Each structure stands twice: as structure tokens, then as C-alpha cells.
Length: 159
Image 1 (cartoon, rainbow, N blue to C red):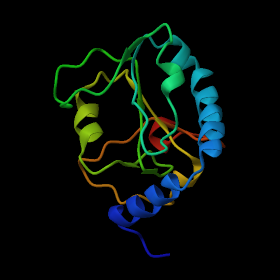
Image 2: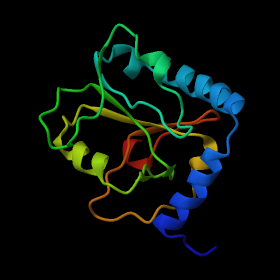
Image 3: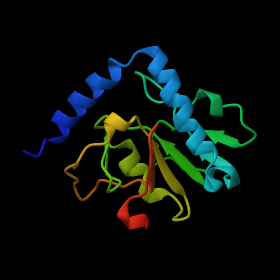
């Protein structure tokens, strides 16, 4: 199979996600959040960075009222950041090596290097967002764990 470019992967996967019906978004999001909230790392985490879902991203809004110190992305990833225990990151596509494709602005690629090495970076995705291979560049940052409605993916660098 020919390797797809980031922009091809982004376009295909975004279209699939936008075409998801709301019943599936709700159903899959619940499964994904159940996986997340049952993780010991999530239960122990006190300070979290969450995203506000858009365009059919897995719904994180049920997490907003948890008894935890919840933050959202700031205007600039280089702004001073709290000492996060855990980051829940969105994305458009991921591979099993922990590579991610976001919206192309590099926000999380610039944020991750500024974080404590203890901070766990977890991506939430639908299973169709997991692709065979993402062409990663040197500046691209990996996630530590990917949760979908079907599985938990631990990238090799975390095994």
C-alpha cells in the first residue's frame, strides 16, 4: 500500500468523523470515557488538561464536572502551564506507535516538550482514526496511550 501523506490522512479521517451520526458519537464516546475513567492513572490524576470537543470528536464534556483540577488549552502552548498529571488530547488520526495528526497548527507538538516527564498523554479516538502509519517528522510528539471504543493501544515506546 502506498504511504499516504499527512494531509491525505487528515482529509479522509476528518470526513469519516464528520459523517458519524450523533447516536454513534454518544455510544462510542461513552465506551471511550469508560476506558479512560477506569484507568488507575486517571483515577490518581489531580490536575488534568482536557479538550472541549468539536466536529464529532469523542465527547469529553461529562468529565468537566469531576472533582479534579480541570484545565483547557491556553491561547499559546508556550504559556506557563500547571503541573499536569494527565493530558487528554484530541486528534484526527493516530497510529499504534503513538504518532498523531492534529489540525496542523502544531499546538500539542509545542506543548508536550514543556510538560513534566511524569505527565501522561492520552489520546481519545474512534477506532477508524487508527491508521497503519503516520509519516512522523522530528518535531512531532507521541502520545503515551490511545483509547478507542474498541481497544487500548500502548505504543512500543511505553511498553
